[in-house]
Image (cartoon, rainbow, N blue to C red; front, side, top):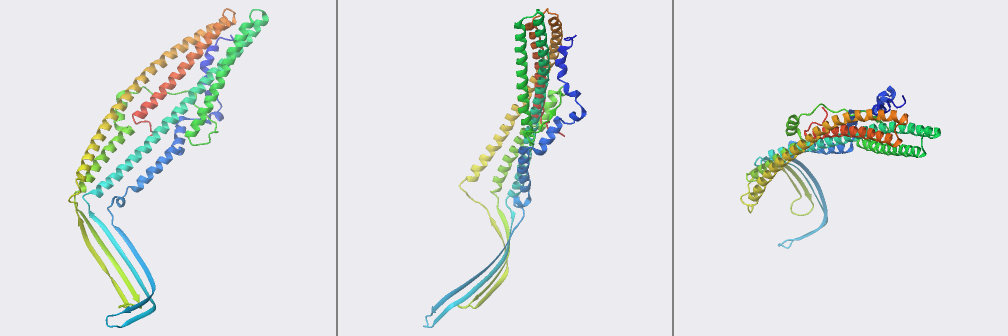
Amino acid sequence: MQYKRAGWRIMLAVFFLAALSPETRAQVLLPEDAVGIALENNYSIRITRLEEAVLRNNYSVGNAGFLPVANLTAGQSNSNINVRQEYLTGQVNERTGAKSNSLSAGASLNWRLFDGMRMFNAYALLRQQLEAGELRTRMQVENTIVSVLNSYYNIVQLRQRLAVFNTAVSLGEERVDIAREMLLLGSGSRLDLLQAEVDLNTDRSQLLELQKLIDGASIQLNQLLARDPSITFTVEDTIATMPLLNFKELESAMLRSNTLLLATQIDIGMAENTLRDIKGRRMPELGLNLGYNFNNQNSESGFMKTSRTSGINYGLTANMSLFDGFNLNRQQQNARIGIENANLRQQAYTEQVRAELLASYKAYTSKLQMVALERENLKTANINFEIAGERFRLGELSGIEYREAQKNLLAANERLINAVFEVRMLEISLMQLSGTVLPE
């Protein structure tokens, strides 16, 4: 029968990509492929990685002050002067165009031997800054992965809806043909035909709107992948959800791996390091200096015609701050307050993330129940549409009643597609909150 399986066609059309030829299916962009391309090309990730590379270069013993500083200097000076010298004895020495020159060279080495452990604190701070940079890179990677997957599955659900309305348009065209035939046979009315055409155009309009949304979402995904926005691709035909997630496992993973939570732990370490650095300023500093100097002078005026000196100089320096107007006391108190603030921020963020995780998990379990309910609703709507189609073909059902059954089927399909999509989005959100969204 013409309408026997018409209702099932809407459901089956959602999976029409599965029947594509191997050549066409080879062009399907898989979600893991999209993530891989983004990790390689995304501009935000690349910029963050370069910023991390700067911090990695800064993490060195030399930058922390462990190594000595050596300098080499050299200079040459020349002069041409007029000299008139009159002595107490009455003798006068006058010379025009007297030339003189001086050559100097030297090498020096300064090495801070002890500074109250501040160089060790500086090295620890550089390490913490690098760890914070690594977490910023990880955070950017996680955000990009979430954006890519959200965009990808948005396209999947839009294409599923497109397939549903493609079938609806096909059925609408058949309805218009039947209404036209019934009008010619005298068993129908002009009103039924016009209503069928209006409904058909409504579905066609929805089809165009969905195609526009797909085009926009595809451009957005290409942008996230940092490639030509005009590249065309297709996506998977279904949204595969994960096995049921366990809240306790998610919460345990969150406490271990949540990126922002790890960042608050580094903030605590930095605050503690600041306090150690301030305490180190109360201790004496000890330095070693070593140098070699060479100087050669020649002059056609004055008391010495030539002078040459060379030699090594060396020594130790020590200094210690005895009083600085209680500034170190003030800074030390502020550092302790900073540590307390960092601990409070960590506690507050831990509770915030735990609350977000619980809220998302409850929404996730609720959506899973909704998916099961909508699957049952879709089955009922399909049976109802089959019956309506048969009765419409026999003339026992008006076009308006038939359209109502079709609208119910369309709504059931869209609710199921949307529910599955929302479950997938909540899964991704839960993985991000638990710090497990990164690929292995």
